[in-house]
Structures are given as structure tokens and as C-alpha cells.
Length: 126
Image (cartoon, rainbow, N blue to C red):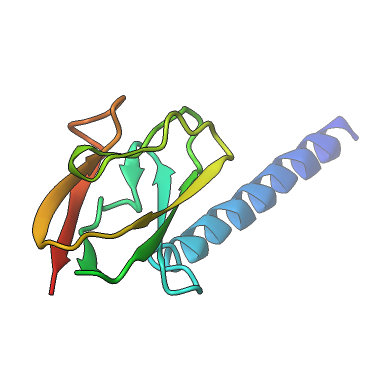
């Protein structure tokens, strides 16, 4: 009887873990752009969207950026040259901002807690 209970518990853990893992794999494919046409950045595993993607912005066309922390530790999103600083975003929290510029250039975005790991570029062009 005890062996059956242990087997049922073990199988339950395997099934739940598999469903959780498959759900995470499926949801990662839809993290680059939100439905509103803006950019969605997910903070997870000390990266932005797994790859720290370049973000392309057109001159004088504001781009909405939503940043969501799905990690177990706090992070922030900073772009010094565009005066963006979200402050710390705790696990489960999000922040939305707009990036707009009237001149072209490349601007570094980063997390101040993990600057060499969590960083990318915002490229403003015509």
C-alpha cells in the first residue's frame, strides 16, 4: 500500500513538472512583442527575453516598452542617455514606458544589478 502511494506521488510530481516545463517553453515564443505593437521585455534568468535583444525605434515615433520581472530576484531597466530608470522591479511586477527620440543613435540599456549580463541596445533610426 505504501509503495502505491509513493508511486502515485512521484508520478504526480512528474506530470505537474512536465506541464509546467512545456508551458514555459510555449510562452517564451511570444515574449518579443506585445499585441499593442510595443515591445515586451521579460526579465528572467538574468536576461531580457533570453537574448537581450536590440530594440529598434524610429525617429519621432514613440515606442511603448513593457518590462515584466519573471525572475525570483529584483532587476531594473536603465537607459542613461534617454533618462530612463525604472527603479527596482520586484518579482511579479511590471513597468511600462515609452521610448522616443528626435535624433538617431545607439543607446545602451541594462540592469544595474547585472550590468555585464543584462544589457542590450536601443537603436533609433529614421
